[in-house]
Length: 161
Image 1 (cartoon, rainbow, N blue to C red):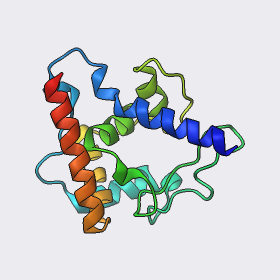
Image 2: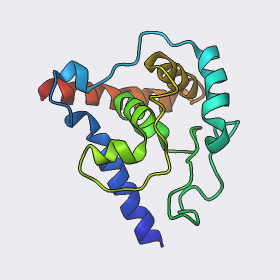
Image 3: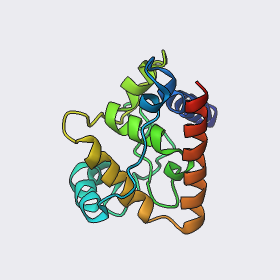
């Protein structure tokens, strides 16, 4: 079981990390940028209505989130300091939220049945950024700095493409 979870995590991480490579447009279009400011209060409200049913009212995720549920899909991870969300750059987080896990990975030629739905039909890009801004606002400074560094690496890599 642990080998499966480890493999699934690697596949998920690598696939999602490569999302912005799928587009053939300019690097700017490939790597979405978090706006300079986010409406944290609006993000908190949107999180409560769009995300909390799976990821928890307090960003705590589902119990036993590192293990697949009865349907074989990994459970919703926490978005607080105990989860792995802060390990990923903004482009990855944005695309995974907008497209959903399965579609985002399918764009990379990967067949992974993620339980994460896409929100492109129900949330605007600005609303997704506000939710991500809210989530990031709850992390300790060290985690925000690490996440910002990963976002910067995405941007540099995207500009090299």
